[in-house]
Image 1 (cartoon, chains in turn orange, brown):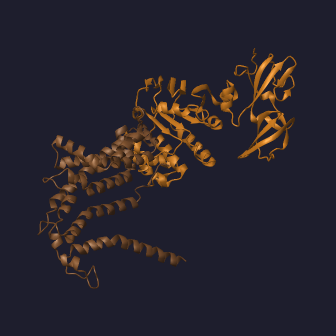
Image 2: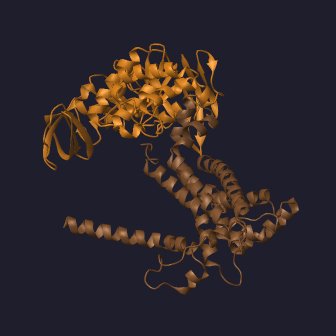
Length: 354
Length: 280
């Protein structure tokens, strides 16, 4: 198991890592999910030895790595940029780490050719990386990372610079390739919640160098522990509605009184924030809202609306054409809303609070 | 339209070629002329109508009224090649350091250090002549090949640093880091991964070093007396009360020859795609 304990790194007064602790098991993919600047890349670079945390410990199977230089750490990494050795052919690029490790040149080249066949580059072995497309270059980088069979594989948003279709395809190929490396600890950094949900066995939510929450993806997505975690795991962004529960019922700050049992649970009077996912808002209801922006992505439509001073985001699983400035009637499914207390912590369903 | 374009293109190339080749042709014919051939003039064809003579060439090898340039020529080769090689090695190492590490001393940063190197070449050579003279005298290396090599290293290294820093800066640090993770310690990373990717830079820097070193007259003249002589100084020594244009032309051809060969080799290297393969 790869154990990261209390890793902290501050540069120029800015905390890049703040007492980060993560346990990652072999044969399982641990996804680090967070926005840009959350500390995901810094954490991966710390594991690789490319940055030195000011405190904390990194160990693999009990062996302390904290003071090892990068060239002595058994890690492989694929980065956002398609980094390959420009002066070497595709085959020699992939064979390079094996040759550096002291394996005979011919054996290294055979292993490289085999893995290049698996990533669909069997016909490209003689070319230089610059002669390949972006997707092919990233496959070379992935092949070079996999051929080492390093116990720790670090994937830093490897598909972020590729187009949508290619990203989908490579994601599936990578998952397939990793199935054969069941003894490898895989850390996968991403800003895309869907990718984390789709690929990971364990999700670690990060923000501003801190770990917000960690656990199985469905548990983390279903019950983000805090408002901040809810913001990170939801894309499109979650709707946060300031609310007050009084003796007479639920009142949303901008949208007025709602039916007493709208949230489906009994909560004591006080201030709350309701987290309503974009897919839990539908058109065809009584709440009037004006269309501010419509984004069509694939077969989905994300509509940004304004309802009585409350910005809302609605997700529809269809391509719809809401004209800018037109008025829609909305239905808020408050029964599915996540409820956060005044301290920002999630109040689980069935729990009493206050 | 296309024919006219082609015609104009070939005309331009022909004119330019003539402009470049003409001085060499003039030099070549003059080197085979006698005093009368140079000053007498021709009736019809100035570069063909003369009585050929090997006098100019003979005077380069100790013939009448000349000097033997074989020893100075070899000296020039030794000093230029050694000085350029050492300057290139040291300059490349310095440039890699300046490109990859952040140096800080008070207000001084990497850019300032790079400028300190370059500033040596901004100063007029005479400013350096006296300190160099005193230093070589203190070291007991005046009028010697090792002394000249030392000075040429100092003169040529700024060029190497200047050129190579830019080339190293075009190689992303991610490539160094990838090599580390693939098991290369820093020195192996530099030799196996980074250097092969700055070969065009090394060629360009090496070419500049060789050209500047080979063509230097000032330091070759001020830091030597009689024991050690370099080619530019010995060519000047050919001069006398009557300018021996024929001998000077022969010497100029001999002097230009290595640089012409160098230009030919470098051109072939660069046009073969030495710059291809940048990191995406």
